[in-house]
Image (spheres, rainbow, N blue to C red):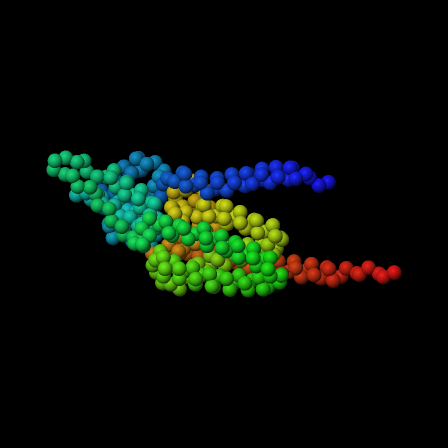
Length: 331
């Protein structure tokens, strides 16, 4: 029994409203609750113990504090991506080191934190503690807005490519070839725009292009593999996982430790978050901290390949089953 146009219109309106709510929550909720949650910070210098205790008491649970013997080791912690900032505490004063390339949002918070360690102003002392950016963000994108803006189009275009390949290419093997070609061309093209035209990322061009190609292969391959293995519903599953969940949890405009727990950690095991972290490592830190995000993207890429193989077997089994169905006898 067919439903009336009024019932269908009501159903579509209700479904669209629910979808809108579902989309608003993951995109807006993490950004509305940004705050340090066990954010790695280093304290170094002769007065490190007292400053670390003061910091822990002032912001319980906000920072994961480690101490280093001197400023040189604190700087290494920043360049090795072991910490987002450092407080150098000496009898003569306190200085704060930041790494805005790791997260401009965190660097801004550490700048504000520096004021807490300022000496009390009086007639003899009115100097504020120095704040030095050890690993600075790109000067053409100091707030990281351009960097964060790259994440959504990269994921959306990868999902769209998987849908196009699913609908336009019947043979699963050729879909896999399309994924590889798109990853190569998309990585080279996206890196050229990000570096050459927009000047958003420093670092070696081929390395940046490789990260973007790896991201495209992971997302497009997995979504196309889901569609091949379970049918077109796999496109929806992939969009939900990578667009509605992965993108807002990627921390591309903030840092995983600023998102509500455990969502920041979960986001790093999805391609959008792993891609953002790996891009930062390659572009600004000479590859430091690249092992985990590289392994995550590799895992998703392998999963996509496995799903594509399963989809190819499913298609062959369907063709063989159809070939065994006897034709109706002519009377």
